[in-house]
Image (tube, rainbow, N blue to C red; front, side, top):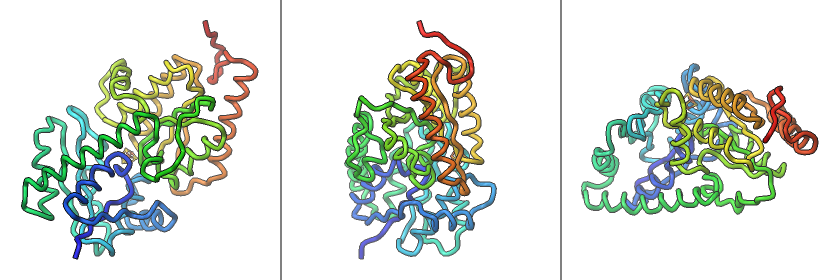
Length: 334
Ligand code: SF4
């Protein structure tokens, strides 16, 4: 009987799913992905997670519950750092414990620690630790990983060419390339922006309103780093650096007509990052900026109204005053 591994469709799913899924498949393990986020997954997650957690972590718990009775293992790695000298949110470090102690009757977790803060030299050890749940053949594990890496690079290449992760993962035919559309930069954590239920389908809503949506994933890491290096202090959070760097890139791009920051309620990181990027944009450009904060109680009507008002303001500026600041001050373009 084939062994089944569940991968929750939350947190790092949009970043690493093609790598992890292919790795397991290459080891002849069946991958079961949790359902798309829905009301039940959110309700289960909220009920079975500590109150203090942010919305994406609660939803992740809902995805684990969605998988728990149909798999042999659930992949919940303890991700501490994915880049040298950087960290990710501390909530990721305690994720396996949070899940284990909050949800009853879960299958065995694959909770390997991933920490590349000092170097990536432990990568082989990590790969072997994960793979050894299914085989003791080191060569087979290495080969499975190398092949998966090839698929992962192909995924990243499609993103570099202008597709959004969600279009690739959900086989959407949409190509984010219509150069006649207004280009909006959407910023935020991947698990907030690309989860249609959490984000209230903000990407689809912008697209239906004649916008091309790009995100921090659309910029090269070199360009993002160059911009992030202009900050007074180094940003030690990997995702924070990427989001701020992309926001700063947007100020150079004359075809970007607005920036939307999608933030999760109760996310400490978002409150800091959103504030930094909003200040820089207000101070150094006349680019319209909108902060949208979502939580489990956010109503769709409110989000629709905010998006419509934001786009109305952009249209109005285009028609009337190309040099009228979105932030209350008159700026002139030379
Ligand atoms: S960065 Fe924010 S949204 Fe993400 S896991 Fe941490 S607290 Fe939650």
